[in-house]
Each structure stands twice: as C-alpha cells, then as structure tokens.
Amino acid sequence: MNKILGLILTIVLTVTTLSSNGFAADIPNSTALPLAKVVNNIYSQGYSGINKIEFDDGVYKATVINKDGQEQYLYIDPTTAAVPVPKQGTKEINMSQAIAAVSQDRCKNITSVEHYNGAYKVECLDANSQQVEVLVDAVSGKISQISYDD
Image 1 (cartoon, rainbow, N blue to C red):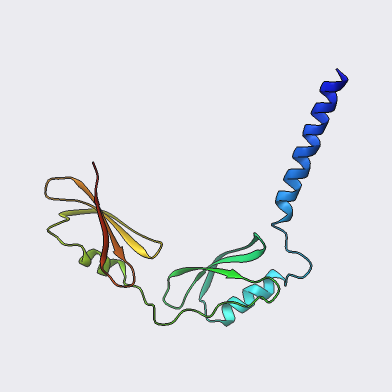
Image 2 (cartoon, rainbow, N blue to C red):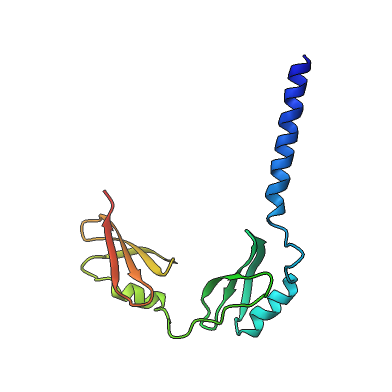
C-alpha cells in the first residue's frame, strides 16, 4: 500500500513540475522589455494594426496588419523590442488577380479561394465536374501547382 501511495505521489510531483516548467517559458524573463514598449514600437514602424501579440518560446510573436492591409507575422526580440521594418517591394496580388490567373478552360466553377503561406488556393470544378485545386503564387501571380481530386 505504501509503495502505491509513494508511486502516486511521485507521479503527481513529476506532472506538477513538468507543467509548471511548460508555463515558465511563456512568461517574459527579467531582461525582456514590457509588452507596451513592443506595441508602441510596432505602431512606430508604420504597421496599421495589431491582431494579436504574445510572449511565446522566448520571443514576442505578433500578428499585425501592414501598410497594404495584409496580415503579417513578426518575431520580436524581447531584450531590444526592435520591430522589423515592413518589407518594401514585395507587393502581393489581390484575390481578383489570383482568380483571373486561373484559366477558365481549367475551372468552370470556382467554389472557394483562400490566401495562405504566400499563395492563393483556388478550388473549382472543371468541365467534367471534377474537383481541381490550383495554387497561385501571391507575388508573381503564376500558377505553382494544379491537383485533381481523385
């Protein structure tokens, strides 16, 4: 009975220790600048909005809106709070341009368009009502991949 009680106590202590260490990584250390400073720096660099900001894995992670109105992800050093300057010259095409890049011969009926990871995923039906997925590069506007649903 004492062995079982000792084993249970060991398991509880181990789980408690491991879970408290997991949360410790999400708390800024003493050298990290305050979140308010990071927020001010984001706005001072010209970003028009902040959707989310958190301290995670030793850095501040922010989801912001850039000058072109597009969502962008930033990783910010907590000791300097230096915010990357918005990238210039890498303007992406818009959703209408992505749809126009897909040939009407290939897609008779577009069912959805989604922007993710630097590309537009266009889902459509071809002339035979077969599902087609076309990836359009968001910078060049060129088709990078075509796949048919089996």
